[in-house]
Amino acid sequence: MTPKRLLIVYNAEAGIAAGIKDSIHKLLKPDTYPCSLCALTHGTVRVDPAWKRFIARVPMDVRVYHRPDFRERYPDLDIELPAVLVEEKRDAQLLIPASELRGIASVDALIARVEERLS
Image 1 (cartoon, rainbow, N blue to C red):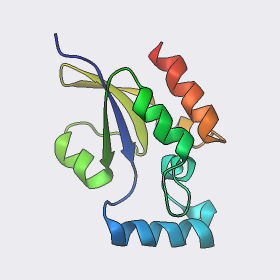
Image 2: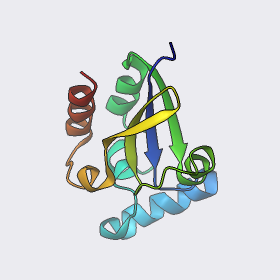
Image 3: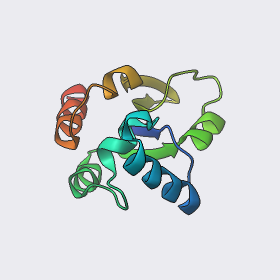
């Protein structure tokens, strides 16, 4: 049996240059920043420590994707990003869609929501 995986998908590019650009965007125009998941889980320069601890203790494999890598790996999965999904046997299902992520106010609330949906 293939174990489940938690997929964390950011609506952002990968890499140092993209990270710097995103940090500047979050500082100058946070209301127009396109990745609500990034805004919750990342400060200006690093991953939120509470999120990092949570990911380390999730009882399944966790895969983190940025938009281009996710689209390449799952070309037939046409969903709005960012998103949190669960995958089992190459079948990925939304756990928390982008529309719901936009309404989550803190990393603690995000962690609670993921834990609730996984249980």
